[in-house]
Image (cartoon, rainbow, N blue to C red; front, top):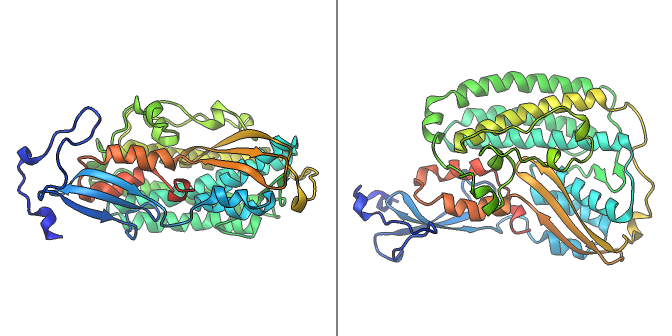
Length: 395
């Protein structure tokens, strides 16, 4: 590895990029070093790998490689009955599986003409916000850890465990929940659930003040993140950027507002935005979005009915022939727009399912453009700032 740093700091050695951001040099030259970053690397967002070309310690070219984790979900679902797909869809985004459950169920319900009871819609909204909170708590530890602040990751995982306790209490599972099913949900809130959730939310709010001091107000974190990894506003449409990566450029894109679903129209919130999309501002947008989820969970628990119907009448799920047709259902996850395109031919099996995960554009097209001229030591911080889950790419 010492060869990486053997080239003298002579800027005349560094090639110029053309208008497409590519390098007009022969990267097979002896001055350049090819190496792999991941998949077994603590700074990788999941099990993926980057094949990078270095000049000194600066990235000159990058090719993303995925497929080291779960993959092939779409084809697997075409060979299973609809109800058998629910244990599969959770794996497409492990830290935030509930959006897959919702989009899959909502697509089935639209094709079958099923109306979900109001109480079930409130519970679905609650579970999605709990999943958002859990995912952000995992991400914030990764972003801080990528810049050497391991203690924040310890705190955030401890906070996340408190939300996983509530998931386990409600659904029976900590990671994969399979709580949202066609026609509704699997059960009502347990007795005392709201009180225990409120304790968790207060704890998270208090701990976030410590994270603000240690991470967001930290001079080292600011020095390494401010002005780095900038997303230009005009890239949003060009690359299909959504979620916090888009909102940090000043565009208030949020499926919960743009295409209202479930009970979000009855909740009081506005999309969190910034004006300058570098790593620091993207982190701050997610921090504020995390705190907004805390507020939304409180609103949901205050407004939702204590009891009511939680499932609509459905056919026998083992022999359910969904009417022929096609639809696209979307939701706002922590990475942006999450969607399922479902095609039914009227049989017991899906004809075609296509998952629209934000990671596909963020972790391939966008990352490969942004990483050029990035320092080797900053690759992990840049990757985490885009918040990606590899199974959404090779799904």
